[in-house]
Length: 419
Picture 1 (cartoon, helix red, strand yellow):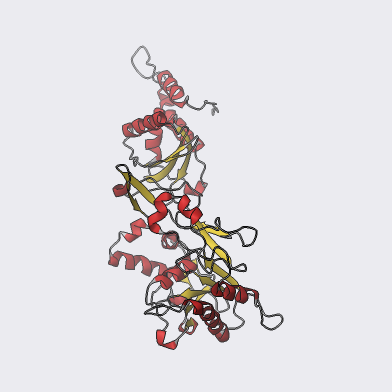
Picture 2 (cartoon, helix red, strand yellow):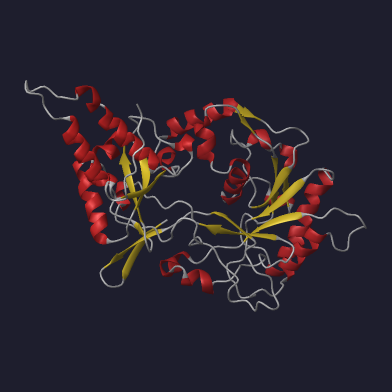
């Protein structure tokens, strides 16, 4: 027989205690009167844990699996949090110090099994939602070079290169090092270009190669942990627009971008491509006004001045990063720092950032709360709030997961932070 029982919020502990007393009454001989039902206590507790689960079913930790849980408490009050911490300590559950507080909820990160969470009725009474904490690449970064190479080799064996006629993403940056085993299958040597031959095509900085990896895999952690075949749906091109030493003359950025795009199109004019421009100026003084660089991007995107019927181009341009030293003033620092040139281009898709990851699992930073709540504007993302809205476009056009930052106040004014 299966019974569905409605238990009001906050009364789970009372319900379980009453049921335990009932099930453990002894007979005259001293034996449990309902020993055949005692095991159902664990089943009831598991059902309670499952009732709080709001994440994807596939993400639910298995029985006995120790994992990071994102716990949403029913109340944001300090007393409620203290009650949760006491119950968690009784169940030997690790709870980092940092939390995220909302008007009616508080988010806490815990490292536990389902059984540990279900062991304390007092803990169950504090819950509103349970989700799986989003994992970062920290564990991979902690590996030794030999161990990292083994993971790379495993993924390389599972890779299916893009088809010959697959679309490409053309990276306009510092060049790309195609010698990496995970990049080479998608980036033949014929797809490497540079504004000046003397610059050579390899990456002299590292930024272009990192952008190529993001463009190809997104979060590489997912591909590393996948276990099955990983099919690459698109390839890469690289057009080097920054010199290995010194810098370009600012007024030349527009013509360099036009020339770099032309080099790629001359080799494969019929190829479907998207241009990725994650290089911007370091200031926002244009305040939405066109510059020679943004005008060049607009011209390329619209195929302005070209033959009738010429294909238009998709340019994805970075909004630019806020000053890292000012991010402790989030979100004011985002409101006053405008989109960086050429992100003001009307015809470009300007990409900003939101923060999706708020969990800090490194014990060294347990006391560092995240600056933002899940889904909020990312600490690094610039905006167009200081622009005259009647004249200039609203930017960014789209936001993607761009990381987060955590900070801790020391004394009255000294602030330490980590990203």
